[in-house]
Length: 255
Image 1 (cartoon, rainbow, N blue to C red):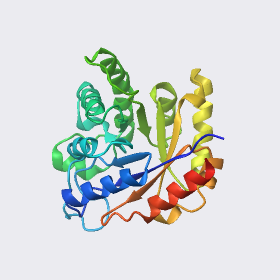
Image 2 (tube, rainbow, N blue to C red):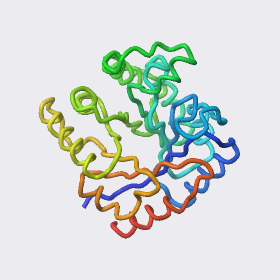
Image 3 (cartoon, rainbow, N blue to C red):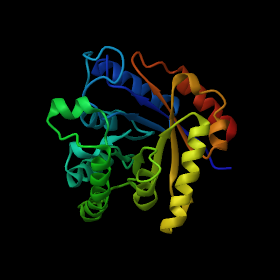
Image 4 (cartoon, one colour):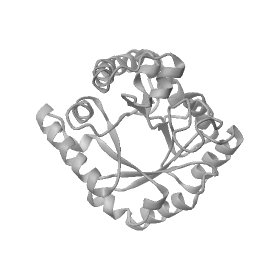
């Protein structure tokens, strides 16, 4: 049986930097396999004008504050940054963290981010086309950087689009993330396997991660049966650790 891994995504909204730092330090101490934040500029739920912090800046502090868990953005909005720059940022934080970084990326979707920060929103199709053009640029830049990453710096693609996104995962990704429930994950996972067959990719090369809510952390064997190898609970401030502790207990029992 594949060893299941577990993690936590900390939402940088309605919070303070001190509260986030305390939370990710605690998650690292508890034994989380991964710790993440998100790449948005405004809250995604609750008060739309609540305090909010920029994700990649937070990741730099997260990388320095922790020592065990792998780290990443779940996921970066592709068109917010030049792809070569994004690759270099991830490589640099891979060194800061001692080789623990993921490069998480997706096509982007939250229109307020684009409108208020002056990015062109375009359409879902145009954003996916851009992602398809930028992924090879990221990989090429990583290969050129000096020094090279310390760790394997896996590229993680987030999304569940069956015609384009999952094809891009099969072509370029080392890891993939989408959401529950288990039935949804199993369906998308099977389609990803089909894309791997079509493009000549070994499906076992792609880590399968799933993001779940606090109310969906019991019996993670449901997600293992659906094909997941990594379960990540999504939490907001005050960053309760009980859901992560439950995931860790199940991980250890399944090992």
